[in-house]
Image (cartoon, rainbow, N blue to C red; front, top):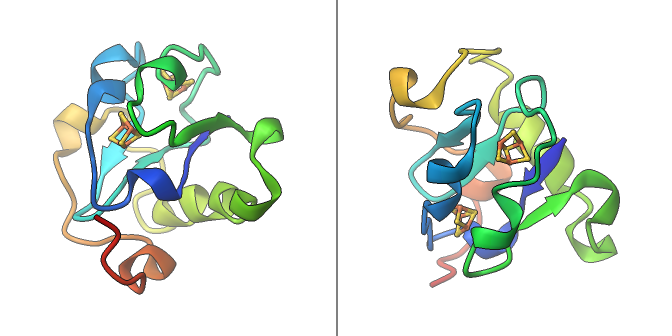
Length: 104
Ligand code: F3S
Ligand code: F3S
């Protein structure tokens, strides 16, 4: 799966959302998250992010390694909704993201 990491927090450019062919990039108040069970690893999102927040899981820099589980944790209650547009923005962030100080 691909992963959205810290540089998205409080930026939320959302260029990635337009590129994803399976609509698996979901929105919280402070960040977006890729659903690891729905991402088909097409990679279209990665180059369009202006903050370079998106990584293939195996390419995450060591300091951002925790973001693979952060993306997965966002879906602990949601499961696999089958489309972010249909679901709409959520009112919660993954807990460790919610606890971050302002980033932007
Ligand atoms: Fe965030 Fe980059 Fe997408 S800032 S919303 S991961 S384009
Ligand atoms: Fe979508 Fe990016 Fe995965 S475009 S399918 S989230 S690699």
